[in-house]
Picture 1 (cartoon, rainbow, N blue to C red):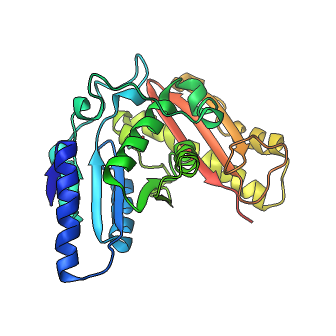
Picture 2 (spheres, protein in one colour):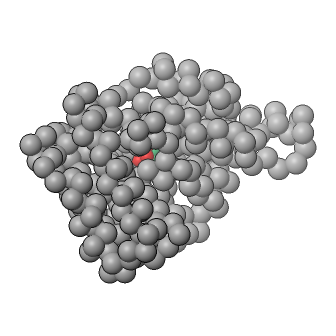
Length: 290
Ligand code: PAF
């Protein structure tokens, strides 16, 4: 596995990986990318596994993107266990891991911003202004640099996934976006690098986000399609948590592509929740099936 710290190294190592492959096995290889901010966990591992199953040239990036953190957010304290992250990448035998510094991605003259305003201002974007413009900008740059045929994103960050799909379609980028299911702890808590911030007590509170979403999905499966009733049912499971410093920011049933909120839920819609527990942001979502 090669580690690229500059854009020039990434491009050279990407080319070398393709050439080595062509010597053994002629035919156009599929290039894959797993973009990450590090602090890798089993959710990221599932993206790498899927990339390994589908691609011949496997690239991951580890970059804590300053543009997607707002003032007062956790940019400085975001976990950066780089050696453990590289070990995980090695265990997947990736071809290249791109670990750029901020000045490599955003040199002083950098002046471009990518925005998907219809999707970026709502839900998580309403609570974290500018967050999704930062995500859209860095993802566009990473897709341009690695030029993958496939890029792998977790459904856990569902709004991010919708934005990345929209921008690749709108800009005509030659990358298919592959959505991978959320990986959960045995009790349902969605894996997140930020779970490391939770105290044992908060961990017990956080798991109930999933309990709320599951209860709503079960009600839907039992035939309740009125979203207000579904939401009241889910929200009733969150009541009383204020004592634990828990603030619910949104709980909605939305169209799975545009994220427009629904009055009447349909199969395939997404239930999304966003909350703050102490100083930690928690998000989760589920699909409404049958
Ligand atoms: O999901 C993440 O880890 C980040 O938002 C991403 C897509 C790597 C962009 O920085």
